[in-house]
Length: 88
Image 1 (cartoon, rainbow, N blue to C red):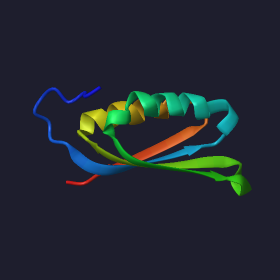
Image 2 (cartoon, rainbow, N blue to C red):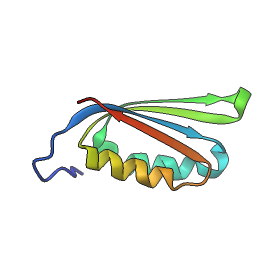
Image 3 (cartoon, rainbow, N blue to C red):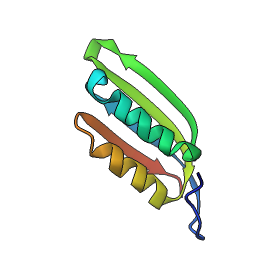
């Protein structure tokens, strides 16, 4: 599902996600990533057992509004941290 119906400029960027409690939040994060899958160019997910968390890195090609919508929803999930950077 393409979200960019207007003339906003698509940009390449990264989204970093840390899921502190995988059992509690992973399915919710995965659901949102599937919903916004058309923006995601690449995804790497690594369990970090030493810290009992999961680290997900996304490469995205999207407008700032699209990335903001995705990261805003992810950031509302309990026990999940998210940061993003888009190239100029």
